[in-house]
Each structure stands twice: as structure tokens, then as C-alpha cells.
Image 1 (tube, helix red, strand yellow):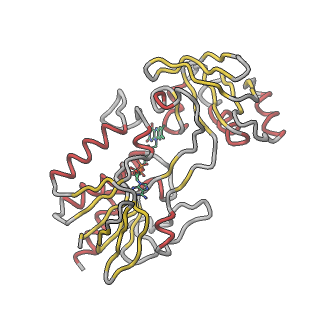
Image 2: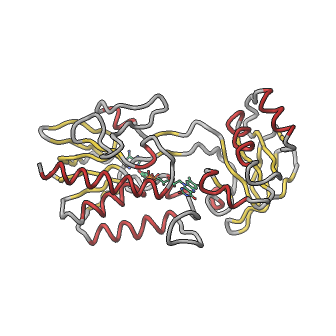
Length: 296
Ligand SMILES: Cc1cc2nc3c(=O)[nH]c(=O)nc-3n(C[C@H](O)[C@H](O)[C@H](O)COP(=O)(O)OP(=O)(O)OC[C@H]3O[C@@H](n4cnc5c(N)ncnc54)[C@H](O)[C@@H]3O)c2cc1C
């Protein structure tokens, strides 16, 4: 039986694995190899990386670092988690079952991004998801919100803090409240209710957005805001872990412990600002308290 099984080997899970590895605990990370840190080609707000760093790079050096500390990895999707004796049984897609005395959920959130040709290479590089992370990148520059309904309209209004040159493409033609439409108009934010046909890009650098009706919007920066992102807390729910209405996991702020004995959560799946540095801090903090509990 492992001392701790970490479900999710993104930013929070890897940081927790490094910290637990340094206590010499037997740790297993089970990861399905997707997640936000796989999608983001460049983070711009991380201490030590003023020129940006990709999620894939952080993940690969994180795995290497944890591996040197004896942490084991399984690349599989966890499908079921249940209590078993004094610990937990974690079942993965291929039928294997792993047991752990402690459990850490670091499963993250997945953005809902409709299929738009050539969009993915731009994610993080010139197309962003989080104004707190990347609003600065569009300062006084033309930017397009690729979005849906009220969520897209609100994103455009938020971005007005950084730039006045904005357009919002309501790709799914979902309803936008009249009050929001009025605010867009008042601020001179151009509004298009039209499907996006494809993205024009060069090596991850956005060049423009081509709409189904043939309109071409030129810009080097965009934000996506389609709403209904998936909070990956379903496994935690199986164990009776308390969730907020928005499906984020509730934890004790100091220890990151959930309401279920010996179960922790860290990173975007917990309710707080969804950022890399916070996911790292969360992972470390959870690991410290998991260690304390293993000493008892
Ligand atoms: C395009 C984009 C740009 C971003 N830009 C920034 C930025 O500039 N700055 C910033 O601070 N943040 C940014 N973020 C947010 C940042 O990526 C997240 O805050 C960070 O990845 C959270 O780390 P995490 O470990 O909680 O989740 P993730 O990194 O998403 O990791 C979760 C992991 O859990 C695994 N997993 C989920 N379910 C299962 C399962 N059932 N079984 C096994 N494994 C599972 C996934 O495979 C994944 O590896 C951006 C996000 C995106 C998508």
C-alpha cells in the first residue's frame, strides 16, 4: 500500500509529489495526461520565468524531479475511488487497482473550448483564458473575445481595463442580456453574432479570426470565454467529499484537507484563483499536512 496516492499529475499533483518524496514517503501519481497544464503553451506570470514557460515543460521537469525522489507514476485515467480497510482503493481504466493510506485529488478543471481549427497551438501563446494571468499581454492592443453569450460579453467588459480595442465574437450565438449588449456598445466593443470558421496563426502566433460569413478580424491576441468549464471533482464526490454549488472541492484553508478523513485536495479543483503558482502552493501545503497525518 502506498503512503499516498495522488490523482492528477499536473502542477498541484507534481508539487505535492516532490514535497512528499522529500519526506521519503511511498508515493504514486496517477495521471491521465491531459489537463490545463497540457493545454497551455506559455505561462507569463511565474516567478523565475520572465519570458514564459510551457505547461509541458513544467510537467516534464516536475516528473523528473519527483522520479528522482522515488515517486512512482502511472499514466492512466482513474475511474473509481473507494474506501478499503484503513485506506483507499483507486481503480484505473485498464482494471488495475492501487491502494493508498492517504489520497490527494489534484484533478483540476478543464476548459470548454469548441472545436475551432488552428486554435490549440495558440493557447497560452497568443490566445488566453484568464484575464488575471494574461490581461497584461493585451495592454493597449487589439484583442478578440472568442466566446459565448453572457460569459463572452462579461469577458470583453473585463478586458476593457487593459485595452479599448476589443471585439466579441458570439460563436454559439447564445443569448446576451440587453444590459450587457448596451454596455458593449457604450464602450465601443464590436459585437459579432457569427460562428468562427477557423483561426489564422503562424507558429502559435494569432494573426486573425475568420468567421463563417467570410469576415476576417485581424488581431494578434484573443481570449476564449465559452463558459461551462468542467470541474473534475466527480471522483471526490464518490467518497462523499463536500463540494460547493459550482462543484469545486471545499478544503480547510490551512491544511487543504477535505471533510473526509485522510482525503486532501489541491489546485484548480479547489475553490480559489485558478493559477499555476497557487496550484503549486496548494500542492506543497497539502503534502506537508499529509506528512503530519502519516506520522500520527
Ligand atoms: C490556455 C491556458 C492558459 C493558462 N494561462 C495561465 C497563466 O498564464 N498563468 C497561470 O498562472 N495559470 C494559467 N492557466 C491556468 C493553469 O494552467 C492552472 O491553474 C493549472 O494548470 C492548475 O494546476 P492543477 O494541477 O490544478 O491542474 P492541471 O494542471 O489541469 O492538472 C490536472 C491533472 O489531473 C489529471 N486528471 C484529471 N482527472 C483525472 C483522472 N480521473 N485520472 C487521472 N488523472 C486525472 C489530468 O490529466 C491533469 O494532468 C492557464 C490555463 C489554460 C488552459
